[in-house]
Length: 153
Image 1 (cartoon, rainbow, N blue to C red):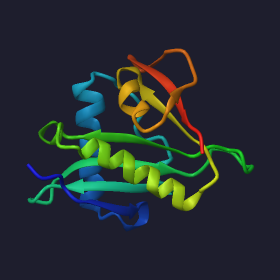
Image 2 (image 1 turned 30 degrees about the horizontal axis):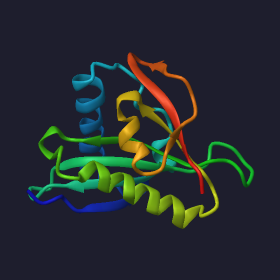
Image 3 (image 1 turned 180 degrees about the vertical axis):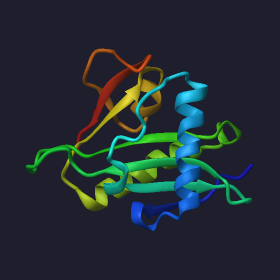
C-alpha cells in the first residue's frame, strides 16, 4: 500500500467538507478509539497550518497541525499536534511522514526555535527517533498518559 499524499492547508482555505472530515478523523481516533473525551475545539485551529493526507477516494486518512509560538520572544518554542492516522493507514509510514512534514514547516517558518510537543507517553520512542527528548514526568491528559518532549535546534 502506498502512502497517501500530504497537503498543507491554512484553516481559511479548508473547505467545509474538509473541515468536517478533519474533525471527524480526530474525533474517531482521539475520542472514540482512545476513549478520551477531550475538548478538541480549543481555538487554535484557525491560526494553525494543517496537514491533510487523503486516500485515493479523497477521504482524509491523516492529519496534523503546526502551531505558532504560544508566547513572544525569540526563545519561545513552536509545536505541532493533533496528529492522527486512520487505522486503515497505520504501518504505512504516514505517521512518520506527517511528523517529518510538520518539522519541515516549523524549520521553514522558525529556523532557530526548538520544537516542544505534548506526546502520548507510549509514543516516546517514535518521537525520540526524530531527536525529541523527554522534558517532563508523565501526566494525565484526559485519561491518556502524556509527556512533553523537546527537539533542540
